[in-house]
Image (cartoon, helix red, strand yellow):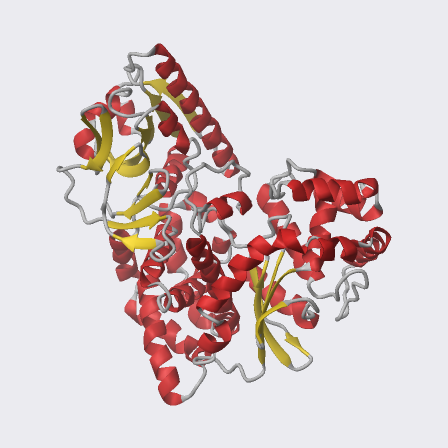
Length: 592
């Protein structure tokens, strides 16, 4: 969650109420599809319809909403949402308004009463609350909500099972004083509300919890069928690729990681805020990332405060430390993806959690008491000069990083092949290249300067243009440039009989850390480098061998249809991903 929003939540939610129908995982842990969030979601849906970028495609549930609430599309609450959000064309800005409205609703009692539990000064929101109350009463919203619990069960099953993997009261209780703490997790169903933490005190009880839904795109890209259905690109509104596997255990790990990230905010944000003088001496942590990925720093609000990524690092570190007790391989994958977002210090943070968790147990003090010491130790361990070295040594090459470089350069060239003996194949690859280019143009829409996204053929490219930032579309048979660059790629296609196999290149000798995701409930994530796949699609990034300041992204498949799997290359945090139907491999490597 954006760190500034964490602080806002802490101020807003001082009166949040525990839902009466919450699913009690234990006496101190509850989870629910929040009726307050779902009331807001229904009104939002009536205002903007199925095609809105924040509406989750919930199948027949949408038909049920249309049938039950359709007569109220002109209700005042719907009109107020239209007026409030209708002029906000920026998806990130709309994301924040939706988030703040939902967060404020969590400080009210359940519908239809919706009684504010603390004084509110926002006149518009009070008027909106009156309109929502009227909507809930006239539609008998709680009747709809209670009678549609069967729809919510699929999500709740994942949430509940995840919480049982590592119960926060038992795990957190070893390191944090939870003698008067309740853990509460409230989620929407129909609208993708940005995930967030909250930690109010209610009638003398401290609440640690999370709202919204897991941020399954950008920082934590979707990789399962369930997350593909629920994920939204709430920064650019781009469609998701269909690269996913079916694995409920992986869903549970993804959700558990989200929860412990937000709980990491709950136990560290206040102490980090109190230690702001130390924090301000660490602004170079963000500056180093911004120098390399300035576009990321522009569209991701974690970077807007100069220290927001430190807050994220402490939450990510707690997430990795906690998940290592459940699935160490998954925790390591999570750590690598955090590095890909620029967190070159994340291993040091995790090591400090291990160290101070031990000290916390030994001295009988809560872990959050040691946050100032952890900050000071971080500053001593990673002075500015060493920070730059650590960045170069730890941040993998990724499509995210490559596309950022192209924003600064102001140009990126998408190259498709003309070598396919089937003219229909050439035409298909051209259409794929055009789709990739359209995604990139949308992706670059928030960069202040123009980024020229060009589409060219493999026979219409100059030697000088080969030194620029490129996206290569197609395999070596279809694309002449790919065929000529095989020795520079860590993976390549080789034909055995009548099959094309994607395998490791014998010319590639860099260290690769790789993870295999399978449709296996016992071992959902394995560490290892397979890279020997038939019927596979691949996306990868490398430094351009003709100009290492720039990058090349390659998307390809064993056939033209496999190539198009990666028509949107904008949200990948691994150096390469291989998709082979019921199996996926994600690899990371560093190129200095």
